[in-house]
Image 1 (cartoon, helix red, strand yellow):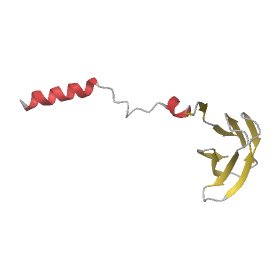
Image 2 (cartoon, rainbow, N blue to C red):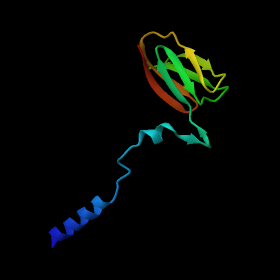
Image 3 (cartoon, rainbow, N blue to C red):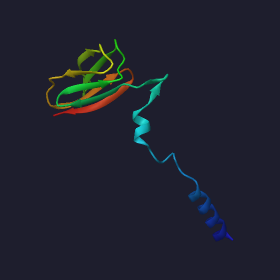
Image 4 (cartoon, rainbow, N blue to C red):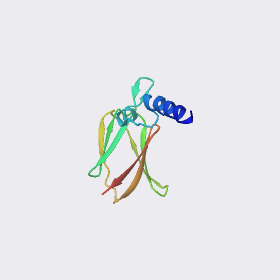
Length: 104
């Protein structure tokens, strides 16, 4: 009797999709806030590329030990900036979005 109950429970569990355990990266990257896309940041070859950035806000660049080394004023939603940073790991903050980048 216990085996039959165990088999039934296992079959029921296998018939459900456990979406809580699967993470869809595309859904995480395109988070919407009040109908607007969240700002996206990317650092390539010591250049900061912004997409959907809020105009008038500032990007904060912080070292991994917590020292703020630079603030960049955003003038366009899709923009790019030359960073000229030494090789290290940095934290970038912009309007609630925090990302870690390695500058090589």
